[in-house]
Image 1: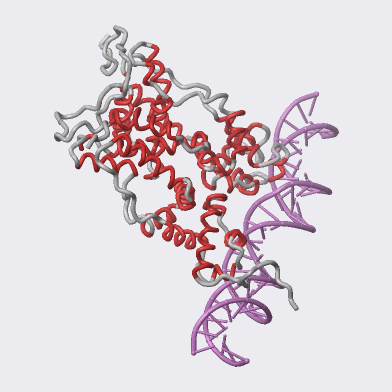
Image 2 (image 1 turned 90 degrees about the horizontal axis):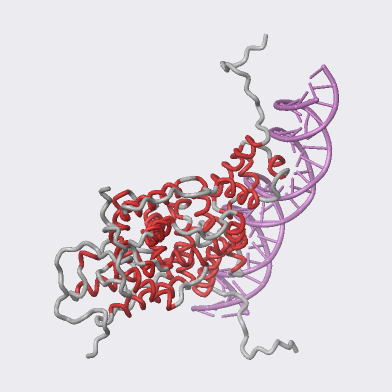
Length: 221
Length: 221
DNA sequence: AAGGTTAGATACGCTTGCGTAGCTAATCGA
DNA sequence: TCGATTAGCTACGCAAGCGTATCTAACCTT
């Protein structure tokens, strides 16, 4: 009699259909995170997905098409809505959501693509066309827009520059340190950069300039 | 008699010594800009420099060592000092200097390295050790520090977050658009993000919140 | 002009990856 | 169980790149 290993139910040796495709999607996201767009190969994806190249070529003509399909599949469809009674808290939460996205495989993959954007403009364009319906806006922009609609922020202050502050600072922190910002850092970004830009001044101890004049006006000496 | 082409002085067919090295440095910076760190090859560098691989291997054991030497050679030693009588103008100028660095071959190469930092941590570490003596600080931080020393800005407001605002927004603009920010954009970054963060509020028309309460305090309903 | 040094050219065996062809094995549904 | 479908395996010729060895040509100084 054939003695099987200690497995209580028979196990299929091959994945089929959607099971296989999901494994391939996970593999390509991991590959692009580890090797970048330029390092993507069918060999590598197939090996990581523990499948044959032929199974890939039956469905996709190139690693890029495969990557775009994987990102399309993984793209979040919507973000949780902010409340209406805690601007600071909602901004911090929005940045926490951004960080959460940044550690997900799809977020990591998108960032890898954007990091090499000038080398693969066609891929970035396809990403916008086929995965991002439009520039939906930044995580913090959703919050800011919401509070402006509630009449609690001056809408004129929500400029393209101001919309970008939160994300820009988070990305820079990650680029400089190779670490994710902790909650204390996210709070500092909100308190020290975003809130002042929408008219809520930085908390400060009493201070006045030394009597040299107004620093925002050129000297007339 | 041997008729030469219309060249008035004889031309050497081979570069030697420092001439060759400078050509190789230019080639590796162009290669990393075009192909990324992962795409660097001795074959590619040699071809671009129009020299033989043997000439490279006689000096450098790997493309990475060559890249580090090239970046060391190209690293600017100092930045122009700011004046003391036009904070806004000096900040804008600092961002212009940042943009100028970003379009230089060495700046492009450094950004290509940082974009793949998690894939090549040893290279980034070597970059810090051998090219950047220390985190000298950002372009705008030099200006902010200077004006604080003059007593024109509250030094407590120049936090690590605030130091990063200018560069972070410029980098994000480039990442999102694949274009350099123009002067109008740089001025907007200064006026709408940096100056508010150091206590100089955004210019605004008269505006007041609708009577819903203070947006920075959680609701007690 | 001669000699020493350096640059460039060429070839090599090996590895990795490409995209394809052909075949067998596994899976599923009737 | 059988047949259709799909997954996986293997081999192939080609290309690019590696690092090395060997040789010739070019350049510079004495």
